[in-house]
Image 1 (cartoon, rainbow, N blue to C red):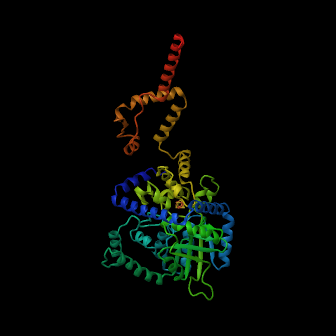
Image 2: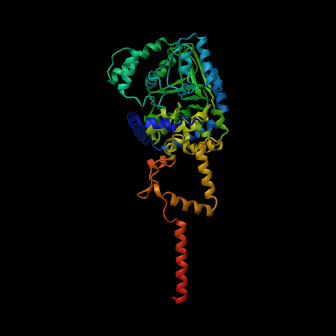
Image 3: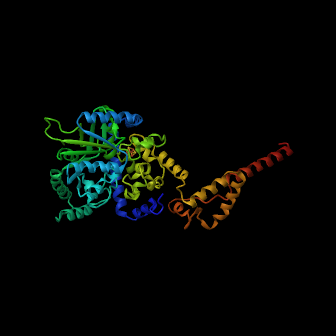
Length: 481
Ligand code: SF4
């Protein structure tokens, strides 16, 4: 684990940013409230969740079969499928397609997998212009940042900051008016859409029975990205499959409601292969790159397998008491929040994210919010346990727990430890609570009430009571009462 750049250090920086905290809380609250309204209006939400869980679990359990079926059907529809073992292989595949097309400009619609493999940097290094066309992604691209929320990438930005970014990018003197800012983005992107040689998208779901790629957007930008350039590249995590269109119906109900509180997404595009004879639009080539990058390793891990059920709705972020305070960048991974804390450590090069499972209060709100019932908090505990087994803990923490185990293994040691602690706590107790200003206890007592150890333990009180009862009964016997 990289101790020098720990999530705690980054969290401290985020906690000092009042604007960030207020902005994240405001949007997360809005999304959460809208989600409750949308799920209420649908009715029988728990049944929908259970159905979603069943579909995802079934798909992941038979992933090899459905991947084969999907690839066959894509090929039959005229598309091309490649499987990438890791991020660098996937990036190379994208580069090869772009070079073969002698492409100089790329437009992209929102894709977390593209963030995962860092494709923008790879393409820019190869002198290819890349433009994000989702408004939030476009803002973070101009700011040279990564998304700070899975669904709302620019959740941490206000209108003034966006105006400054757009003004600098366009050389125009803009105002903070929403219509003005959206108008600037629309004008800029229209030109880029028309010029682009290649369009890159992610994939919300791949449908195995037809080889279709399904994209959910609210801005319609994915339709431009997939229809105007002559070549379309899809970046898809290997788990993002559904067996049939009937399964898509369930996900089309679960995902928008959980993500943005909408009853249905504004645009749902279903693409089956490239443009065919007689079609009026569409890319002439469609390449699908299916990324593993550590995912298949989870299939054999009973405790982590369900992480592959995730449909990237972001609902767990909106309810997480940690995410709501520190935002996404403090996680240091492209996947923030509770899902990021379990997904990032298990993808390739996950060692650098081994600290993320500690960025949780283990309250379980994430698991309750998850539309496909992923037990995220159990996974967080499991990953912490795995860190200990791998020796990825601070020496002081290891020594403290060894001492704890030693003292609690025998009654005599336990009693002695309690007596010593009762005496030792003296200088730290204020108004019945422990207040540690320094040392490892500080972090705990700074934000919580840690009651001082009672002067008498329950065992001692019980012992005295037993003694008293015995004495009373002896005396009663003597007096014959
Ligand atoms: S873990 Fe569940 S709640 Fe979180 S993003 Fe994935 S599907 Fe949504």
